Amino acid sequence: AAHEIFSQTPEAGGTKPASPTVEGLYAQKLRMKVADVTLQSNAAMTMVKRAKKFFTRLSEAHMRFSKEISRIGADEKSKIAAMNPQDRMNSCRDALLYILSDCDGMASVHHRFG
Image (cartoon, rainbow, N blue to C red):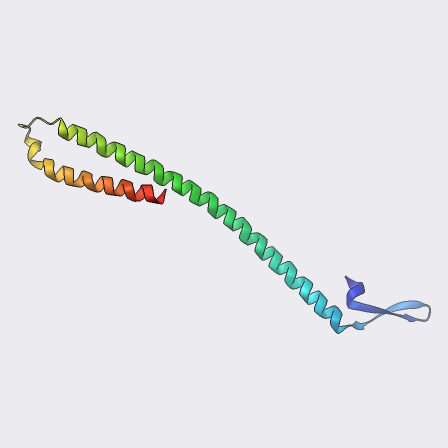
């Protein structure tokens, strides 16, 4: 406030602002820095809250995706197990099982992120 920056001196029955005191200028600069740091801190806290919400949503998405990959992989494995031994696709069975094992790995990776 002005009363801290300027000292009042009586002159002819009134008051007149004198030149700013050194202490008053330092106090004003300090108040401005405190206000600036407070604004930055508030902005950082808001961003932290936003980031927490985002990571919660991201974690939930990873968990859903992990469950979906596991479900799809289990479904395919049961179909392979039910294949007729004379089926022409039986020759590719091992390759598909290999790919499905990668599905299990992907599901576990997403589960760790969740």
